Image 1 (cartoon, rainbow, N blue to C red):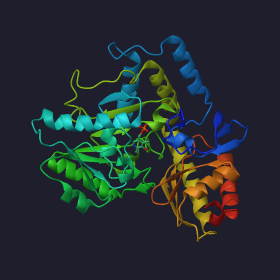
Image 2 (spheres, protein in one colour):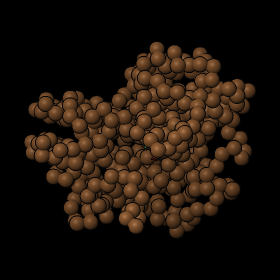
Image 3 (cartoon, rainbow, N blue to C red):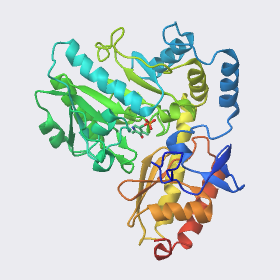
Length: 396
Ligand SMILES: *Cc1c(COP(=O)(O)O)cnc(C)c1O
């Protein structure tokens, strides 16, 4: 037997973290990395946050898991809190982002079936989208690399160019149930939809009784400087999938919906053994205690602007490698003129700086939302040292 006992689906790098300290990760060998990846936009409070640890410890001692067969004072409290913070009237808790998107897809189909439009089962999604790795969510993505080996895909999705309103309108047919979209594509390279596009999709949905389903798994929970990113576009969705930051590192996701959009989600129609168990809820409450207030959101915006501004100024020194920087809040993309993967590896291996590569030649910069000026300084030092020592020929 030569297969790795840890199923080899990830090309894992040599960093082997065993400990987290605020905005740093410490490897098995004691090396200390500045973590501007945050477990891909998950560790919103960084590592070793006392409030989050305390909440999980207390809840673990009290009640970890029971079942969704019983009443859930914990889930009721968090769902009310999310309803109060958002457009939504109701919440289904999941364990991951893909499951939150799955619930969103099911809710969208169930809505149309409930109102008697059985044929309206198709969601229009957008090129280079990422919605997760289940059969449903890979079928929702146009990206061939995620389909390979797993066909046949599920029916009921059609793909359309991102940020092209005329194409989106033209894609609407008799079977269309709605649109499923990331308002800012994460894995696709921090590509931000225009305001006109998002407002236009909302208007198309209103005109044709379609559902606007947002995937805010990466953009949600204060990451972009508002609680959800759609607030910045001046529109509300009918259904929204959230995960990543919402548990601060504890696996939790949720599907948020209006009362109207959740019409088809009846008793017995959906479920999850773990979804929203007391331990996950406690973790999320601790995250919201920190991030769900205007002062914190304003800080994320300010830190994001500062960090983005400094990167923007810096990349002028290396016009041969860097094209531009874009993003909202602390969801930042540095677009390169060359393949970003070797540069991300160089920053990691030679300068102890963790970032994440993405589509469209982008280096994703996703620090914990609790960074301060010292972390921004440290990041800029490492980035400039990294660029100064970078030789693509050497790393290729
Ligand atoms: C990460 C991500 C997902 C999938 O979340 P998992 O927790 O890995 O299932 C879905 N949509 C977007 C936009 C994501 O960034």
